Image (cartoon, rainbow, N blue to C red):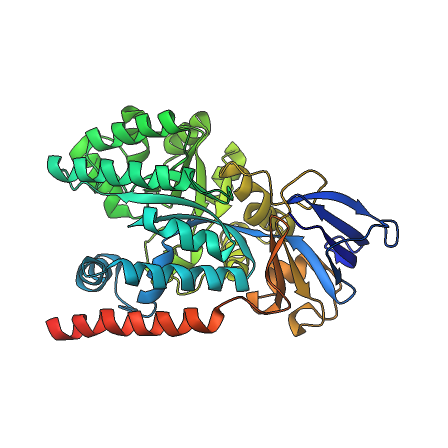
Length: 427
């Protein structure tokens, strides 16, 4: 693996450093001019700011093809009338085009690790790996309380796990991804827990996203989704619960005791009007781990984690007061905390950790005059300021250039048109 030296780079704390990357990890971080070594590549960092790569802990990446479809509908109509009919027509070529477009968007906007739940994930492994991004892929497990469908989803889940585990670079890893309490039977949920234990995979699940989900679960199972999942044995420190808007105090205590991590998706929650307000204050007071995600591009409509950081901070301030959460805490959620939640030792520029980082153009208008880099990153910056994305020491965006970008965009347009032409014919 190549060596990479980044010289005279501005750090988020205002210092300037030289950063040496070897074998995919940070090997030295020293004062400028201290590291004297011949390397394969040198980046002059004088006009850049280094920060850890961003971690998106909840995504449906291939849904980039559905960006702008069914906007301004409530969640139930959005799913039943627009999204599910289109997804039923998706073939592998659509999934591939959507996934590659998502990887391109994430790389360009600073995401270096993402946690995905979708379909045909086993076939996605080669081209996700080719993009150079780090990913945790979970085959969406939906059995709809049907015994035959459950058997199919078991086979597809294990196929995806084996495909991820066969990824030679190690960048793509598996998850078990039961969709939700309202789409997966109790038998299916128990199988997901057993399978996650057997393979050592994290579990990725939608949880308490809407008030209706909670009310329906209480009516059908006699408890909230959190308590129901605890009863089935699904909950544990390897679980990422997406959304978690409608939680009781007892739910929060259970999640803390079980070590469940949360993926907060403020942009999607607002756009789909899930109701309620994410209980950031209560979760932080109880010590529950909170990470950040975008959700899919059909319900956001962006995969830019800078937007997610800003909105997360502002929503919390609006509800709990201006001092409720600071920029540094939000940045930590989007970097180090996200990485740890997915079992990856990255998200921090520190010797010995995974060399996943991004370089921002310090002359980008959003970073000028540069009085406080962390404040600028959270409250002012956008993904357009990213010039370099470096993952495992490999440069996947080089001074604004991503390999095969034009081909990826052309293919995505073609496949979206193909998918929607079938939609128009059916109407």
